Image (cartoon, rainbow, N blue to C red; front, top):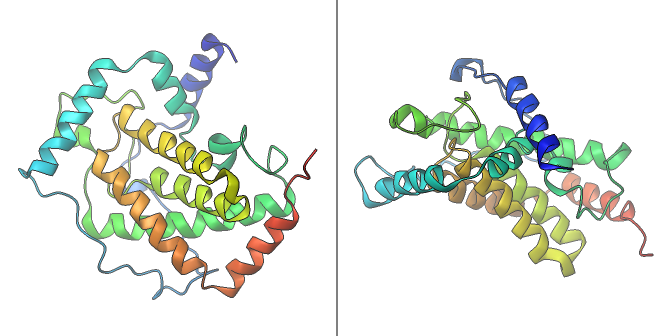
Length: 232
């Protein structure tokens, strides 16, 4: 895809994701793998408090990215705005691309439940997106709705990577690196603090551990294993 076409695609995505208020940002919940109680990470740490070193570091990083980011980086970040499996992993996926059938259904189930858990933590802390706190920030992904902490993109991209690494251990580093890249795009785009990203990764790690104890999740993993592309 040429840069021109990539930018056009990004523009279309950004127009599709018109800003929503936090009240309009509805996330579906699911208890397919875990009960509501098992999904409650009540001990999950709060975001950095205003005025702390970590808080100031967040905004310093956001300004640094704003000063040096390129149009191409913003376009790439926009392509991943839907936080879907194919948007993140299609070119390195061990499954036929795009995802179809059972594989698509399983990754959709994982996304719905994971997004819901992240949304519950967001609702607990209600951290606003960085551009609400610092008016000098100009997010190239737009002034989107929703809450900031933890990053849902960081959570789901790492969750996908952990699932893929479970299925194809030899490629674990590659999958995790791609998830890190997808998460960083949200900072580059100006819609998440770096600490939101790190929190999303921690949440995915904890949630994946919980999923692996679920018989239903284990069954889905085995189904996915059976659907892997055969080595050529």
